[in-house]
Length: 222
Length: 226
Image 1 (cartoon, rainbow over the protein chains, first blue to last red):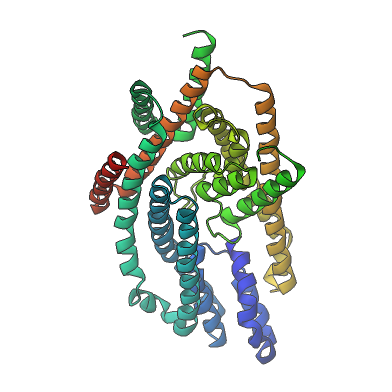
Image 2: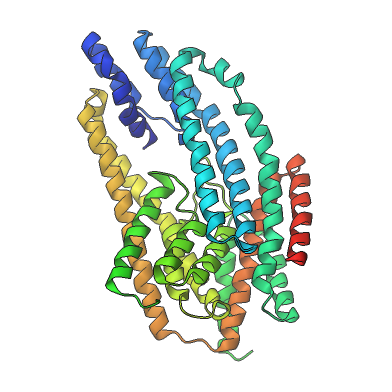
């Protein structure tokens, strides 16, 4: 659906073309809604660049090829920056915050910081795409984006690394030491089995299987 | 307040619809993250503690899979809301396990529902292929709004299904204390396994792994001091 979403977002950008060249406008709208896939936060780069290319009256086939070529790099960079970087970094920090007593504030902070960064990135993407057109690749290379991707990965790893023991202690503190050992046993078994039997045995399947196994054991009186 | 009044039910359904929409459609503002979805659901139910406990545990599960490329992933948003409905007003040590079991099943169903919505969207695009090729703005708009409606309906149905199941389980399933605690411990152990798996997989053998270990060291220290 990202292709249709791009077409929807391109409509106001291509509006001025309607009065100048109505035929070209129809073709441009059709091209803007063709298949497209990338991280939505960086989609503005492709959207702005192709809109500018349409106003520059570049050949349609060239614009379509250019748009297709942008899918993979924008997808990879956006996923690295947001899904593998910013989201786990902020989630890790929010988890630590919640456990250490910040409660609601940790969650509000997560939402505000994430959305502030992503909205600014979307704005920057569209502006940069519109300003650079077919030279958007060079503009991305010279921008803050590659450096941010390099830095956010370690931050995400650190935050998640810190969150896991803190959260574990938060859950296990009210239980006896033997109960903690039991949970640790499930943890070790979960890591080992889901690695050995991947991709069939996902963690969700392992969790459900372990719970059913436990209920059966309790039912038979073990 | 923990009773499921009509007002609370409507609030949860609206929240579940928004959370369902947020995952892939709009606004992708991360309100579909279990930590957010669960805490708000807990607040709506009058039990923020239950919302936080459930939200944090599903957040650990969610860290296992990055929603990148063509990967299929569970939808933890409405599932977390249903789990909070089940866990609210009960001591979390006893209710967490069963709530997580319900939530995981719903998350898997939610993942399947995403595939169904995608197939329906693809069919809608095929039906309007000629109009799209002609660059008709109206066709694009209808497709866009249609897809949003389908996703909103998906979130609403999932949340409603989850709340109905949670209410049924609450009324019919009564576990003894030992079994309930054991289920909770299994839920905690598997959620931690999911988070560790996700963290190690994302780090690979790169410098990220060193940062992960450094973070774990700091986390252990914080856990001891807290």
